[in-house]
Amino acid sequence: MRTRTTMILAGLAAAGLLAGPARAETPAALKGLWKLVSYEVEVRADGRKQPVMGDHPTGFAYFTPDERVFFLLTGEGRKPAETDAERAALMKTLVSYTGKVTLKGDQWTAKLDAAWDPKWVGTEQTRTFAIEGDRLRVLTPWRVMPNWADQGETRSIVTFERTKD
Image (cartoon, rainbow, N blue to C red; front, side, top):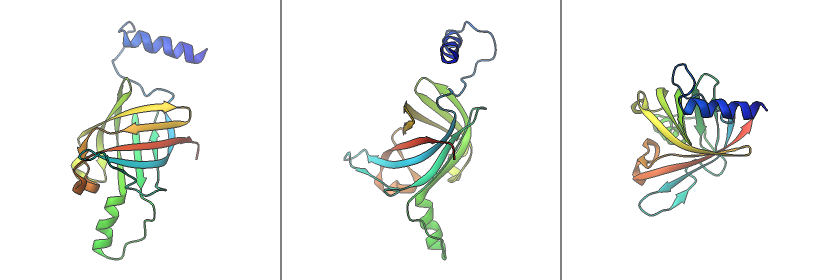
């Protein structure tokens, strides 16, 4: 019953029939903690797909009730760095950012106020998503990703699983 009421209210809000400030709330199905399962990149030039973060990456995404998202994604096999070169290499196996989220259909846009790459701070990052059971599949638009810029335009295909950890 609760889900039906939520759907009706969401439909009325989308149709502009409810008064109040216009904002897209994070849907209940998206809110909460998601554990990273896989991170794959597709190269636009040749369609090649590769697990750029390894076969067993680690990380989480958290969607708060207050329309904020936190991402911390790391590659498999990271080791403590001893040199500047090793520290620089670790950047290729890290994606991390946070920002306020707005929703429109099957896409969210996060306006970033902090990120592992300073070039991303202040940008809007849009992602397409699908929730199937306890799995969240995320697809980025085509872009040149700082971590693997030598690949040219790529898009990330990221899969999470709902968790309570």
